[in-house]
Length: 124
Image (cartoon, rainbow, N blue to C red; front, side, top):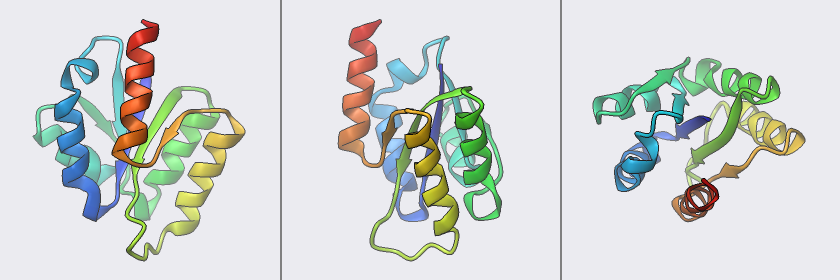
């Protein structure tokens, strides 16, 4: 199962903390993590196997959206920072829309991500 992880700059540490909290889930052989560039590099440094794409502002959000549209990515965890301005907001909104169009689960904060992880874990 391919899962995309993305975090705005102010949420990257929170993403790493979340992944560590659920590392048993994320280290399973059938889970493949993909990420936007900066998030992916930070997560990789924390000991997770992840395939980084471009940084969000230079096309990474669009690359992840493409994976969702191709039905390769089955879930997106995107810790957004709602209190900051982001120059690539149109790309972010496009990714959210593509998740909705293709009925792909999307968590935008740790609480919703936790529910998705627990749901998947119970289904296995």
